Image 1 (cartoon, rainbow, N blue to C red):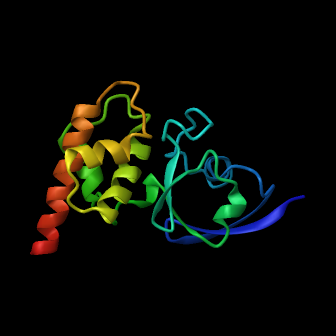
Image 2 (spheres, helix red, strand yellow):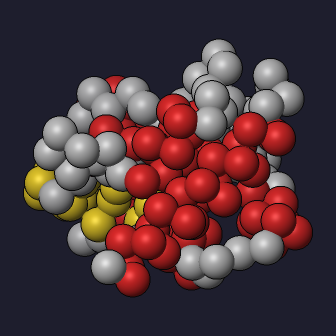
Length: 160
């Protein structure tokens, strides 16, 4: 039986009528036409589908949309502020941490959650936090550099 689900996605309230067990990823992609979050494994093991739900990293492929009812969802499409990229997005560009790009939205959103929780992580903390996000191109060295770069940029803004 379909249910009415209300989400605030990238700052805009959206309502869908759907099966409450349907994945959040499917609703974002098919109903709301936000295709930044990717379908990777469908089992919550690769991180390609990562979004932020109330600021916390969430694997949208294994999250029933009913769990997202009345929550704030941030996708890669809503991360930039007007014409300015989020510091993590900019750092990924600056450091060349994008190869095929398939994992990039999930990597970026997971890194945003990391830096919100730990603004100055060590390399080991970054590796541990990002462990659930897979990069098929094996671009981990540049991804690590990008997260370090973003942390420095964010710290600089906080200080000034």
